[in-house]
Image (cartoon, rainbow, N blue to C red; front, side, top):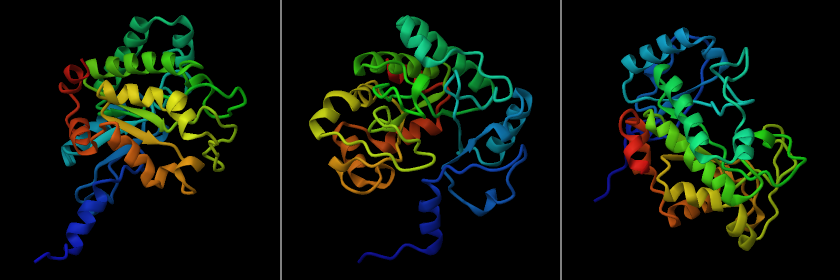
Length: 268
């Protein structure tokens, strides 16, 4: 006879899929109130300098060793660790223009080394979106290229570079945010493509990343009418597509939790 999970069990399950942020450079006081929390994401307010960041992540890992500590560090315009000065790494578009996957791998590895020293487990990068809409206000130079093959090639190389230093990668934004002209931080874009167009273009880099063993993927907050009216970020069709392509969340989540020393060989 099936039993109803306790309130404590439900809370543990819910906490296990949350990745919240917090204010400041000290441990959040509410952390003990969320047993089983999947992780935390750091932003510029948490990372004023590398020394402070390292002290914060060390304290968090000591308090809760199973926490996945994530950060949005893409290089170029999107940086948290160097928010005050700008990233030392070029934008990924510059890497795509040079079109040398070894150089892209090196950029990912150099970034991974910094993140590892700072105690970061998961990088919310690389961007797998295709730069197919010149008027896109939010992707732009964050995309490697305007063709799916080039984006796939360089994104996998970048993720492998991160993994070499023991940092897990999180590709984004399923099913592709490149062919939109609306900032999803401010409104809800619509990606009005057929399933055939989607499979032939936008989803190609994500499929390549899954085949390469990427540990995590982020969905985009946009509407894809071909998948229904719900935003992809809460649409079961996105999860179905990922599962159909062999993306196993539990296995990859466990890998992200034990990123250091474990990711690199699994990409090979």
